[in-house]
Length: 325
Image (cartoon, helix red, strand yellow):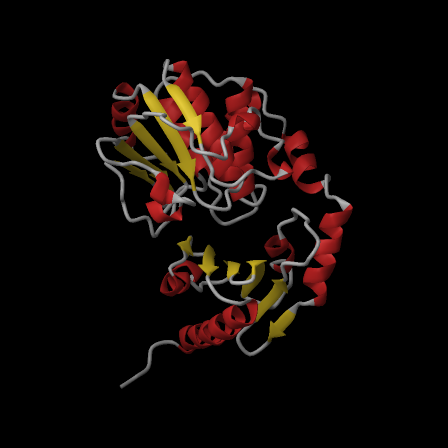
């Protein structure tokens, strides 16, 4: 169960709010977007005006979420919000185009579950032991005696399902399953969510997977597997990292995705004890111990030649254990 002190903090933010702006991290995923949509509906039930803003347009991979069409890709002019809700962000800079946000004389509410969260909010609701922001919001809503609608149940269920790898990752607890169960009770459809996530891939998705498989590199000495996705690759929406991580015998997997000539999105996953979040921090990235990301402002080749040797050394040093002086 979440820390009981979070409930009055959350209520404090709600009671002091008349207009809210809701944001999440760059390259938003289903946990981020689903959580933002559920939070918007909850706040609107309290007669609070809300806008969700991501500076990039969402791809079609979010249409399983109820109400996703309300998300704004441009910050509305003259929207004088009094409260800024930041979901699923370890720091405010992870919001794309965060420089457009106004925090002066605003209440900044930080709702997150990342271990490297900097507690940047005026109100910080950060639980690093919970599976997802979706689960965190579920228990916040429960603490406010909120009755779920079909849409909040669907959006929170999808958020939780996504961030737990469909309830397969080590971050799943009995409380995670309880939250998901209650969402199903209120109308969330597990099979529909599964179909959307796993049985709605396109020809472009399979073409992207082929590129990723063809470019796969393995390092048996460091137990690293990685692949690269150039900017000219097919525009699929499949999560390549979830495919690579299925490879047995490799403890850390990495996907380098070239977004443009000098902007590389890097995803890291660990299956053992290696802390990819701590490793990512040296590149101004972060996330969770077993799942982290980095935004690298250089070429694809430079990203690989910089990161892989450092990652290999870090893994080998950890496996070797502390030196004896």
